[in-house]
Image (cartoon, rainbow, N blue to C red):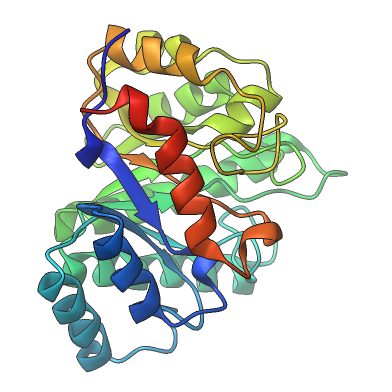
Length: 277
């Protein structure tokens, strides 16, 4: 079994929601992270609320702690954001929101912005919703290219989206947009829920696989490592086989970690420690 570099393990602020952003940043230093993925949501970093001066202040705080932002992930599942929305006002707002997010990523010197396909109405033609998402993503990819940012497109679970939830759907969208500024990623939870194999993402996406959310589950849940039942050693074998050297983000979204977010970090690092160099 190959070893992962400790620097690949990436912290994320989602489960620090009930604490200030600086508390999360200090925790990343405490637990010796080098990389972070920033979840863009209130009260930490909601793009609709923050001025440029406030964004610069956040960047100074990150730099002072010698942390690197590998991806900016604006909240897009709980807020009224939907790139596939049938209502033009919602879709226009969503595209504008992601353009602001791309601008924020540029200011934070984050190379990637995470995007998801949104969802169409479940009683309408899937193709109609797919076409709206495609149009939205084409607009955003062109904007990202101007800012030197890569969009990383994430499949969601079927309870979250009815457009991109599997590897074939992800490939279909990536093939339809001819740009090096949109790539694919995988989250181990939708992967496991769909019964897909991590190796398939490497085989089929190859250089277009640029990011991974790396968490435990049953198979759902976005849990700390050790709190679920996903095949950690099997995933690690695959990562080693394909010489994956990019970020592995610990994205814990379960409410059980909100009271003591550090506990989830500590448990995961303890579980991963035997496999890290």
